[in-house]
Image (cartoon, rainbow, N blue to C red; front, side):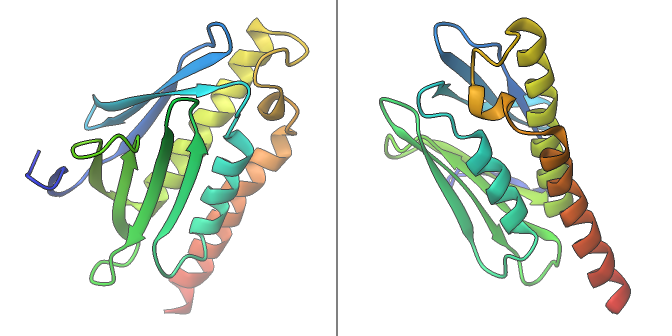
Length: 168
């Protein structure tokens, strides 16, 4: 990790792991290069999943930085993506927990990997929740989303990306 919290100038593949909830809290693990870079805890009370999916949808058309704050009870977590003009389709993904200096990490990512991996992880987590907590008793906002709504985020990104690529 460099002094500014950036891993290096190489492109990393972001991964996301959501633990099953305990007492209304879910730990979210942010990984890059197969190693955990940061963990945050999200609450069933301040469930951010619909907002995270909308953030992913917004990344499709983003021309500048796009960030999302979500309430984690004791702190506010922030996820942001800043496109790199010099490398289309590439940007800086940052996660912080708002605690001050050294409170997060930044990695250079392909936008495609960020959107697909985050949305896929949320979709997989929804399936796990419905299996372990029938009827959406935990993280009900995510459980109440139709699978088609989640899939639409990926399709929206893929269609936009495909048309932009072919317009060149």
